[in-house]
Image (cartoon, rainbow, N blue to C red; front, side, top):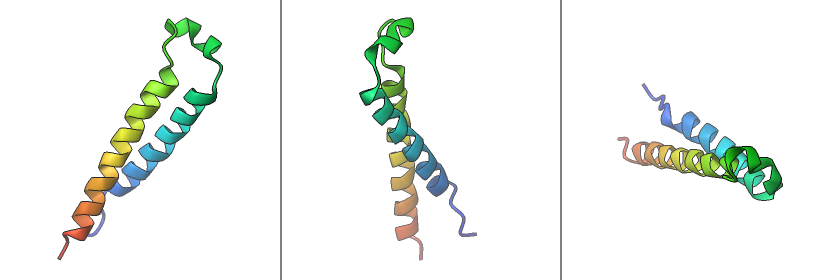
Length: 67
């Protein structure tokens, strides 16, 4: 079986996390007044981006070590 679920999950989380980080960086800080000034999009985007990159790295490592 050659299907590794980490690859599509890594791509999905990396894409969505990157979009959230970019939106969090360019959005108006006034919209975060309801969340006590915390930039939720930037924070969770960074978490999703990191998770996606880890999944991609694990998938690529497993693909490289396959006989």
